[in-house]
Image (cartoon, rainbow, N blue to C red; front, side):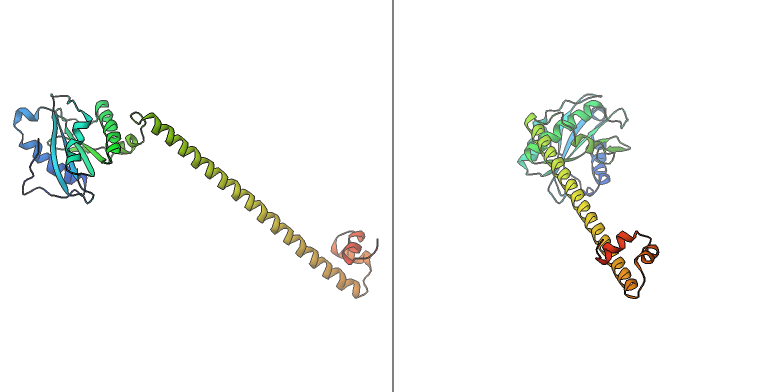
Length: 234
């Protein structure tokens, strides 16, 4: 059943408060008997957040409502909605999502992916308050679920993750090799610089007539090393 917006209702969804503001009035418009039953609505939007329709998908009992996934997206497909929000009420007044609420959301996320329609949130409402699956991070958790993902897609995802891990590991190994090469180069340059300084000092002292034994003591090396620095025969 198509739900008509009133002149007081916003046509654009910018936040969960906007969704609740509209759906709270929709819920309160129902007669007292229907308010004691669970309703399941779907809000269809375009990419800009403009509301294309609000559809009452199912009307259940005081504690549950049966949902057929394809019926949820039927109007979305016909009206070219690219984003949808699921909304249902809890007549009991509690806002705690049941396992059934989580499960149907999990299923609808996967159906939406097949149809290229994003289920961006699920709200549980009462006449006085609401809870958003997205705001509580529950939506993020369900989007990672593999429960209703086709087996071939799970395999593809695992292979993709394996390739990514292998690529990252290779990059780390390359970085390690590059770092080791840079370190070796720096050490070599330091040794060459030290040798050049030692050679310059030894030559300067030797040219001033200082004997090799004395040069060795000043430089704190062996006479043999001083000879090697000066290029003198052993």
